[in-house]
Length: 174
Image (tube, rainbow, N blue to C red; front, side, top):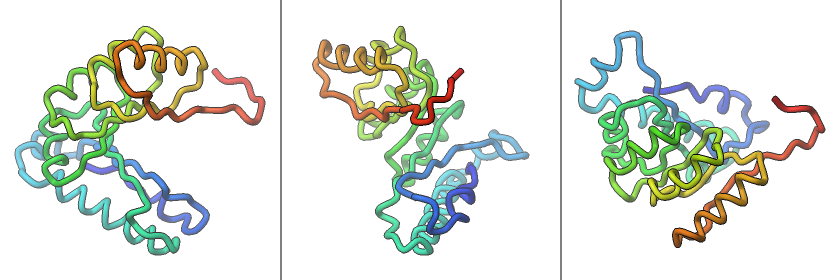
């Protein structure tokens, strides 16, 4: 249940560890074994948190300055619930449909982050389907940013936190 954060931790002081991502991946033995064993997700979460604590210490930072987001992409609600039950509250999802399906099945105090490419036709379903959506990462189109703001206002939501992607190099994007 973990994607290594070694890329984040091995660069020492050169890497800003203000956020880290735990992405769940199936092991060679398969998800059935992980789902059948209580605590596997909690153990993996503790392992990642410990590695973040050590990396932060090596960088001269406090571990409470690092934000861990568990990415639930393609993982069942039962696995997300194990991580939640272990005390984690910040989750990311990169498919609108999955997030809309998962969010109502999980506790309301989860802080959801949408981390995928957001299409304009998915803005309203996302905002109406996930009332505890806290952030959209990353918007690279002014049209989407404006639509997020407009839809949030129309449905009575506070404006969302949004990460904006800016092309500072002038390179063509595809």
